[in-house]
Length: 303
Image (cartoon, rainbow, N blue to C red):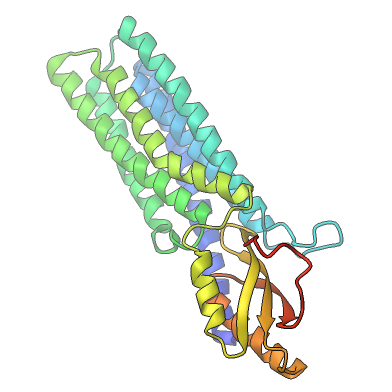
């Protein structure tokens, strides 16, 4: 890595740390305001949204912790370091959110059966503040949302919260002018649906990475095609790809080269292949070189 690239990477990490902290502080302050207003004015929409925002604060904190610990050096017990913590954090965050929306749905059903009086103008005012806070927080992660699963999760949750707050504002206006009590729990159910929709893909991808599945956007067939285009490579098999973290991927493979190639040729082939793999978002590759005259000890029918 060049000095310029290293400086760019360091600046990006610093900016993400700052984004996480700003997001945590802004959303924690808003949770206090929203809980207080929801409790005082008896609004389930505000209380449910506050509960969701509280889970966002916890999620941002957990993601920040995982992001920091993943930078720790490897040791004799954790030879890969703590990169996997980012995957576990994204999985835990998704599960927490789904549990939270379950409680929101249950309370909304209870309110449908026994509606309570709420003050629509206050709901709209508080939710309006939420639109501003969540939009600002989401924009902090916008530029890096495609580079890391945790960052993407933070962005999606905050952007979703901004949209949910728009819905709460609309509910408050409807309640103010119509007095319809059931609008408040109805908006809570809408919030639940939006959160589930925004969280589901995050949950699935986090679970996939936890099970060492091939990361999203990486295709084994393209890896094999790139390998066999390198001069000297006759075949590649036993290809295994998994996520070391939400941003770093690893690969192991057996590479078959022509029997007449020398050791120096093999080293060049490995260097060229690793270079190609880096362009395919695989940062750590372990390659076993085999001569075309050898019989692989493992079953060739595997990938």
